[in-house]
Structures are given as C-alpha cells and as structure tokens.
Amino acid sequence: MNGTRKICIITGANKGIGYEAALTLGLMGWEVVLACRSFARGNQAVMALNSIFRQTDPGGKSQGLAVFMELDLASLASIQTFLVGFKKRYQVCDALICNAGVMGGPYGQTVEGFERQAGVNYLGHVALFSHLFPFLKRSPDARVVQVSSRAHERATLTEGEFLQAVHRSKDTYNPWKAYAQSKLFQVLFTLKAQEVYGSDTLRFYAVHPGVVATDLLLSPLPGMAQTIIQPLARLFTWLGVLKTPKKGADAITHLLMASPPLPGGTYWAEKALRDPNPLALSSALQGEVWNLTWNLLNPYGIQAP
Ligand SMILES: NC(=O)c1ccc[n+]([C@@H]2O[C@H](COP(=O)([O-])OP(=O)(O)OC[C@H]3O[C@@H](n4cnc5c(N)ncnc54)[C@H](OP(=O)(O)O)[C@@H]3O)[C@@H](O)[C@H]2O)c1
Image (tube, rainbow, N blue to C red):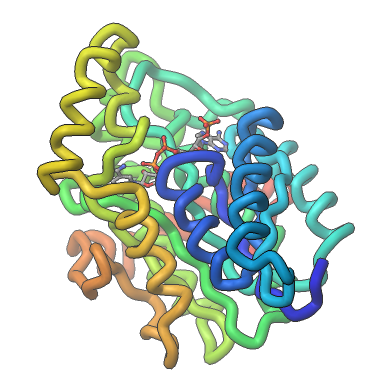
C-alpha cells in the first residue's frame, strides 16, 4: 500500500458502473479495492485496471492501484472474512461505495435466509459498513455512498412491513416490489446514518446513477431474450436513451470528489440533489428500519457501531 493514496472500497466493481468508478478513481491516483464475489472476474478486472493505470502513468509517481478482495454480500460470513483481509492490509478507508446489486429475477435467499434483493442490496452493505466503521473514522474525510435507484421513488412500505419484506417467501415475492424496497432501504439508511454518525469527517450519500446500459438492466430477462435485446441496448446507448457505465459512475465519483464536500444525508440523481421518496423522510420509518436492521444483524455478531 502506498501511504499517500486515498483508499476506496467498491462492491461489485468487476463490471458495469462499479468498474467504471474504479477506473475513474484509479486514474486520479486512488487505491481501489474491488470487493467482488468471483475470484476470476474480480482478478480479471484488477489486471485490466492496473494495466491502464501503468500506461497512463508509466513513472508511477501518482499511479492508482486496483486490488481484488473477495466479498459475497449474500453471506455475512463472507463479509466477515473480507474484513479480516482488509485489516491485514489497511488502517484506513476513505470511501465506501455500496454499489453491488441484483435486480428482479426469480426468488432467492441469502445464506442467512433473507430475501435475495433485500439481503444483497441492503443488509449486506449495512453489515459491511458496520465492520468498516473504525476504518472510516480514521479518515479525515470519509464518504459512504449507497448506489440506490430512482426505482426507490415508487417503493411502498407501511409501518411494520420491513420484517415481512426481508423475510418474504416465494409465495408473496414480487421481484419489482422487492427491488424498489431494497433501494428505499438504502436511502432510509443513508438519512439515518447521517443523523447518527454524520460529522465533518464522515458523510453519507444515496445516489441514482441514471438508467445505464449494463448487464443489470437485462438480467431479469431469460438468456435468449438477453441475446436478442443486447444490440437494442447498444443502439439506445448510442442514441443517448441509456447512459454509458462511465456516465453512471460519474454520478457516484462526483460525490467523492466534490470539494468542499456536498452536504451529507442527501439523495442525488445524476449529479443533482433530489427529493427522495417522501417515505424516506419519515423519521418514524427511518427509526423502525434502523432498529430492526440491527436487531436482524445482532445474532450474527454485527452491531451498530
Ligand atoms: N444500470 C442501471 O440502469 C441502474 C439504475 C439504477 C441503479 N443501479 C444500481 O447500480 C448498481 C450497479 O449496477 P450495474 O448496473 O453496474 O449492474 P451490473 O453491471 O450487473 O453489476 C452488478 C455488480 O454487482 C455484483 N454482485 C451481484 N451480487 C453480488 C453479491 N452477492 N456479492 C457481491 N457482488 C455482487 C455483480 O457481480 P457478478 O459479476 O459476480 O454478478 C456485479 O459486479 C446496482 O446497485 C444497481 O441497483 C443501476
């Protein structure tokens, strides 16, 4: 580790928006930890990134660095193992980008039995944040970004529904409702975390990166349909209807680069401050989701920091 580089962890950075965010930060001299579930895909991305960093700064004076560390957000044990590895190499974390995500698709559960989208998109990231809190506190200017989605704006969530959502069974599963709710949980978390932990040296953001041409958009479709629609996605990107992954990443890295820092506890869409779903502003719902989240994680040794 080069002691002068800023350190950023990006989950799900082997492709899509996360990969482009790693590229942007690395080109600015950051050390980016690609926290990915696949050893092969993660290492391939790291090799590609480091090759670009070497070419753009052959002298290596302000060269960025990409590092792979295995992390499966669908397993709380994997998150714990990630921390053990991170601790061996680093003392500080300047930024955490909670980017990895799954959308729609058939019903699934995490290792601990949480509905897959709530577990991966939300609970896994909260567990990761909890482990990393001491490292974020050592940074003079730490920022935590939840990559949410405009889909959260149409999410519904009544009081008392949070536990049903994370424990949803196959019979009551609606893939789009579960996705929108998982993205709402990320925004609720951001606003409450800013209230509880926010300071001049630690800020929390949620962001919609735009509608971006990545595998995620096609992932709910069966394999054959994906092959047919892929050329259309390329056409729509060319026409500007869909954003490139680089543009999506810019919406995230903008929050890390801004100087002076942008106000924390905020929701952004494509670089503009936006009002989130009014449900996200309900302090009753924020408190309920916050408390129940930690109650769910406590049996696995994960506490509110
Ligand atoms: N694309 C859009 O239009 C759009 C719009 C709004 C919000 N977003 C949000 O942007 C974020 C990035 O999405 P993207 O469009 O870049 O999608 P993507 O290209 O499909 O990338 C998703 C990443 O998440 C990783 N991932 C999935 N499950 C994981 C798990 N259990 N543990 C660790 N990593 C896991 C994937 O790893 P594998 O390669 O191993 O599957 C991949 O690296 C997501 O949170 C998404 O909800 C995207």
